[in-house]
Image (cartoon, rainbow, N blue to C red; front, side, top):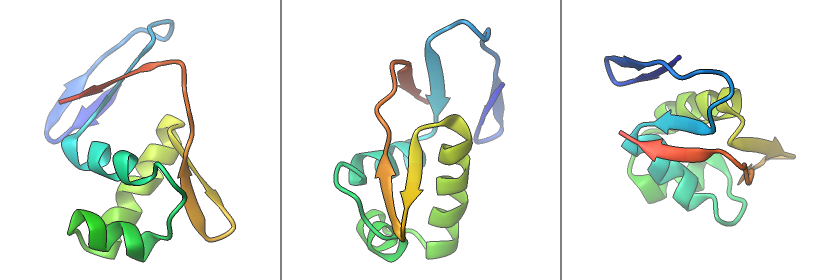
Length: 83
């Protein structure tokens, strides 16, 4: 199950799809090179608390990881769908 805004999207476990919001997609694009949370927040024009919440959601989805104090994107074989 993926929640995007107020809608829920259900996928089967074996399917190769991940549904994310536009905000999370902006953050993923920013993480082409490892960055710190304040840098990401300034670049996507969001508060650092909002960015922190989105990053924890992206960790749960397996799309990002924290290395020391920098965040970086993880390449996955699944297809990312932006809703």
